[in-house]
Image (cartoon, rainbow, N blue to C red; front, top):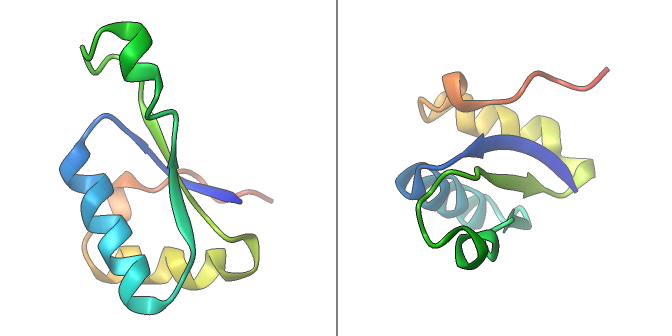
Length: 76
């Protein structure tokens, strides 16, 4: 899985998940369970991951949807 976004914003994560679902790209939000440990304070960011072989396509979709500023730097 390829990390595209790291954020505390549940709206951003939900929107990104919806975009990937519409495109048929598998994705997941990692580190959601940390909210139990931290007491739901939202201090630890969640990671938005997509399948490796569709990461470029997913990145383009997120940029087109206005989430470009949320994206992590591309891996080289």
